[in-house]
Length: 208
Image (cartoon, rainbow, N blue to C red):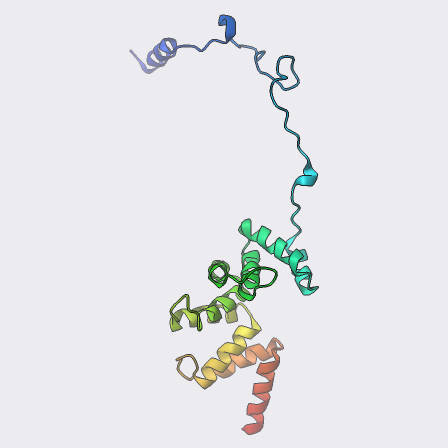
C-alpha cells in the first residue's frame, strides 16, 4: 500500500461528524449568526469605543510633565511602559523613584531603570548608575556603576559626562584618579552646556 492509499484509507476510517438530522453542513448553512432566526438566544455584545481608555502619545506625556500636569503624565508613562516602551519605562521609574503622583516604590523603579538602561536609554543609564549608590536594596558594585555611567556619557548625557569628569578628576567612589580623563569628560559636558562643568573648567584655568 502506497502513501496515497494510506491517506485515503485513514480518511475513510475516520468518523464524519454529522449535524442534526444526519445532515452534512456542506454549504455552511448551519453557521449561526446573532441576527439569524433561532440565534436570538445568543447574547449580543455591546461595544462602546468611548469606554476604552485612550492613551495619549508619549511625547504628550513628557510635555504634560514639563507643564506640571503630573497625573496626566503618570497615566501616560504607566500605559506606555505596560506596552514595553523603553522611554516610558524610564519615566515610570522616575515617578516611582521620586514618588510623583504615586507612592514611592524604589525597588520597582530600580528594575525599570535597569530595563530601560539595557535598551540603550541614556537617562535611564544615568539613573540606574546612581540608584546603585547608597541603595539598601543592592550592594554597591563599582564596576557596574562605572559601566552604566560611562554608557550614559557616551549617549551624550551631559549630567553623566559631568559626573564622570568629577569622579575621575577627584578619584571618587573608590575609582582611581585620572585628571586627563576627568578633563575630557568635563569638556564634553561643557560643550553640551552643562553649567557646573563650565564652572569647574573656568576655575581650573584661573587657578592654573
